[in-house]
Image (cartoon, rainbow, N blue to C red):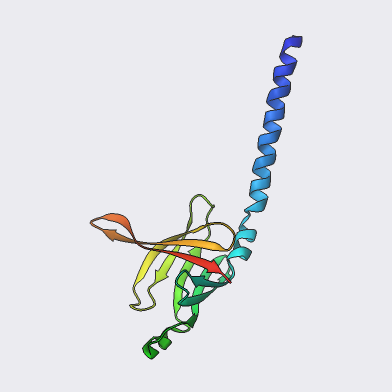
Length: 143
């Protein structure tokens, strides 16, 4: 009976280590932490547009707050809603919402993932031939 004690000790130690890692991961990536990291002003990778992301009851909206445009006819896009109904999911699943193209006004579903601190990856999805295909990918950075 005494030969089982080292094996039992290893199993209990492994279980405690796994539980500690899971707990630390859940605390670091809790929903409230992710919501606070997502709230703020974000700029796209080409530095031509900034949006303000904010949430009400854990559903995010995003409005255009700044545009770097040579053409004066794009100033009407200021204040336009660009992200609607963004609901945060777990890190692995990616969050889902509706992307509104600021130029055409078309609404398309999109997925969003955190890519490190202060970086987002957006993938706009459209059904082509009955299959979901990524039609546009963007990187956004927090200011």
